[in-house]
Length: 251
Ligand code: PGA
Image (tube, rainbow, N blue to C red; front, top):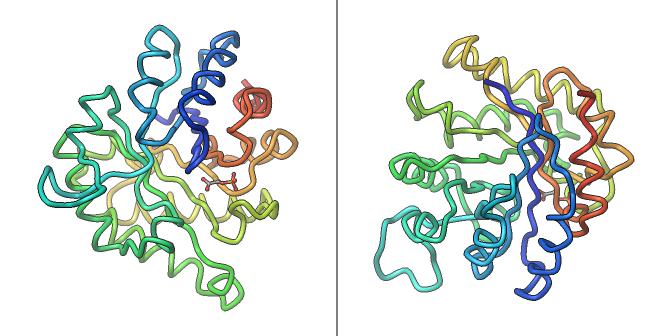
């Protein structure tokens, strides 16, 4: 079932006190029943966030994880560790992970496999660079990211996967893809999934848009046929702007 989803990706922002303050404020809000709301704090605050939101309809998700279950990987966090602090969804393949931490499609395929083996849900991010768009290579690039990073999963695993399309040139830049550009790509992503798997899977998967989503552009972006919500960076750091985005669906 396609769901309407708004997920806040806090990146490396908000320490413990700021996280607590945010959730104290968030818990005064009403979360609309037809929207699945998620927040991805840093690893250090996951457990605190999970405990703080136990009786509140917002899911706490992780921003990343390692592909191995355990071992000598200084500074890394495993799927089992995430689950042990109450987190069962993980964002994989964010463009900052791909670019700054050199995560490849092959590595991401391994992370996807590990997450699914641990019964976790995944928000799988894909997106092209500005050059790819200028050189008209963006559809090929997105197809490659899907094929090499995600298309090894079995049909039955798609219920655990959400795809997030985040054009790199629109992340944190204030430059948003136009609603037409977003719809065009989301439709392409759905078609590519249908070609590899089938129409039912393609129609069921939620596809989020990310890249400078703000309260003043969310309604138009979320109103596109193939857009099921957003992955929100900067605007998720304040309860007010985040909630305006959460309330941007037409029904
Ligand atoms: P932004 O980030 O909303 O600040 O552009 C989106 C993201 O990186 O997920």
